[in-house]
Length: 373
Image 1: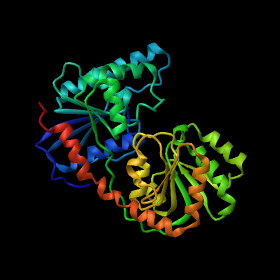
Image 2: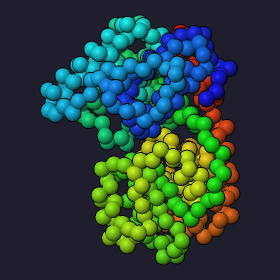
Image 3: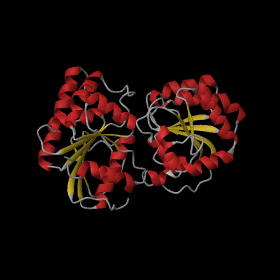
Image 4: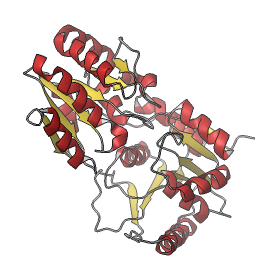
């Protein structure tokens, strides 16, 4: 990675995540840790609930101190889950007392709540980050939602990725907020020829809207017999997606690839990348596809795509859950390679807009700058 002209004086940062097993939030946290470690002058510790037996999906810089708390469990029942949370808080508090970091950064709602509780009474700057728009995220339990509203104001700042998410946190949690978008990680320069391949990336979950992509592709598949779809990711919607492909007669042309280590190579050869999500926090997969110079179509969902795409200039936006509109956009772009080339060329300009030096200056200001009066 890069060194930074914005690196502040030597300080100690402690980062907290449930795991580094996979996911966009975990990858972004690993990217932040690596940047600070390589920049020099900053001591970085990354803590997870997982034990050493759980594989990290993202490589860390040798300068990042890795701490496994080994407090993962498949606890069932309310009391068991409460006891697990208490164990996690106690384990994290022991680390905080031993490490005495200047600032702590936590990602994702459950970990944020536990980190706030573990930090009570300690004189350390605590910054937490919501990685989805809470207004639309249905994965957070009622208890966690209540704790979020009651506790987030105790943090120094809550970082959101979009203005809409920050406004929700400010209004519903009474917390001080900042908007910091994702860093676009270092990407290779695409060198592969674009293929008649539509690529989609993400968890196989209803949120990601891959069922909508399958339905839209089924509408245009007969017109473009050379094109196929590859969906990269894994999740609990695999069975229903396979069934849908069979029902619509596109099972032979839609492949559920699963998790892949070489997403960049798929994005480099994709003739088109589609993100049909029903909602997002900040669409990292879309950002990376644009950075790789791919022509993209995205649902104009809350929140994030419209902050990346200017419709018709560097990509296409279609209404959320509008299969017919998505099919029409597919038909236009699949039929016209010149449009795909133009959109991809403009899309690649996100490399500068979301480059690490620019975004990391905002993180440094939030975490390490002197407190504002």
